[in-house]
Length: 78
Image (cartoon, rainbow, N blue to C red; front, side):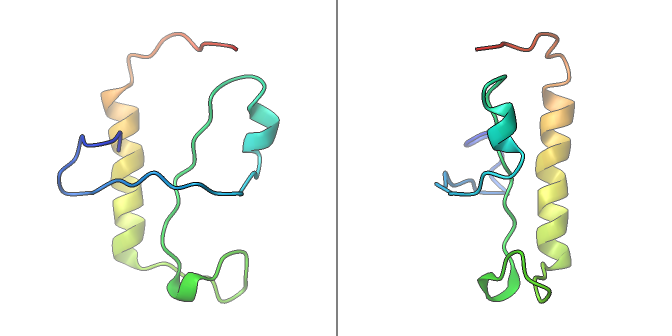
C-alpha cells in the first residue's frame, strides 16, 4: 500500500540492493518493488517459501494499487 493508507497492513520503507529488471527500467520511469517475507530469510534458493497469509497480503497490496490508482493515464518519463 502507499504509506499509511491501510491500517490493516503496515508499511515500511526498505533499502534493498535488489535490482532485478528494475535497473533496466530505472532510466525510463520510477520503480518500486514489493517484497514478501520468506521462511528463514531465504531468497533465490530452492528452499525459499512464503506463507499463504503473506501471499494474500501481497495480493491485497497489488489490488489496492491497481484499483485505487486505475485512473493514472500518463507515465512521467524522466
